[in-house]
Length: 67
Image 1 (tube, one colour):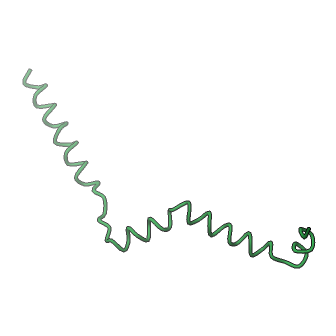
Image 2: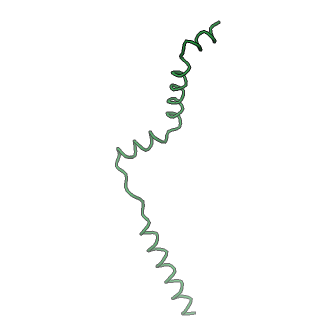
Image 3: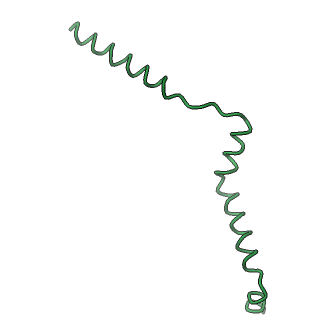
């Protein structure tokens, strides 16, 4: 019974130490905003649509799609 208590205490200590060693880095407000803007899919979709529109705005496309 004493061995089980010692074993569980050792396991608990190892788990506690390992979780404190793998701490996340702290973000500043500026870093958080930059990360949010970079990973925002809506913004990426709008940027891609603007690139597509710019590429489609050629003389050939204007005459081809004119009604």
